[in-house]
Image (tube, rainbow, N blue to C red; front, side, top):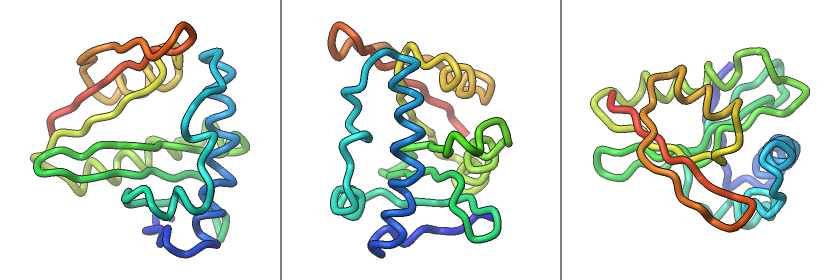
Length: 149
């Protein structure tokens, strides 16, 4: 079930962190860089990030989440996370489809680690175009994608 997450609620922010940290640890292992900002998040930083969070729940358990910021005609996906215990269940696709259905006529933007093959593949499969790649440091480059709805 898809539900809006009230990230200002400390318990909800903790729930997001409990899926975000393991999810980004997998990405860090894939790309070979553990210096990812989401691995440094706290309840406080999540509550003050000004993103809107949507969660995917099985029973009462938060299994995945997506966070966005909407500015003018653009929807910027900041996080698309699934707890590793729930990988390969289609949860990221369900969350993405939810966002896509709510923002017809907008442009969706997202960035991911260039070496994160599963994420790159996911965005390409969903019709995103590679816009640019930026080298952050020796270990990390980001690929930026866009999709016009």
